[in-house]
Length: 287
Image (cartoon, rainbow, N blue to C red; front, side, top):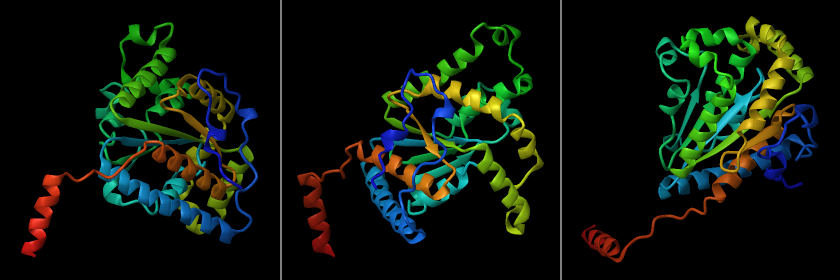
């Protein structure tokens, strides 16, 4: 069964109700062996596309992962990007802002990590945390020490969305293509993954009491994700709501989304000029 990436694309300017978006779909594989075969084929294609992307040097690609705790962001990055040349790819995980980062506007710390043309940048969480966790926990905004007039603006959060979409439009105009993946996990599946982290000694390090604390805000997080996806999914920087209850299926979908995005760039290797070919022939004779 062919994976159609557009099936998971969040339409621009439409209300989003995550209860209507699946957290699980029919698997695109019938066995573990078929899954590995499919993923290997995707990884091989991505490797070739990344090499072409690096050589052409015309675009930058930014892949953003967002999702609730244990949604599978780390695993998706590790498996999907396993065949990509590290020289052309950089991964950044954004956690609690540092004291220096809090002294700048909320887009500053991620802007410093944007990929250059010819490279792929991956954000494990991103500037979107500013309109997700800070809306669930408004007290976090106190650490930014913003002017009172800014905090009291009637459309404070709407303006936050506007800052994001305008920045993404600016990046698009300058050759950056942004792919945003929301790993859509069910609350029941999150509980299973948390229990596995508790029961399996090799996974104990993954578990934090803070995870249980945040789970209590599940409904609020889903509402904020709905607002965020609806406000910031655009034609030039779309969101993809990927069903994440099945990790293997999610990885296949993510890799297909990335392959489709890279293929849409219509890239080609730089063409050699007659002068360059003469230079190379001369060098070849000397060898």
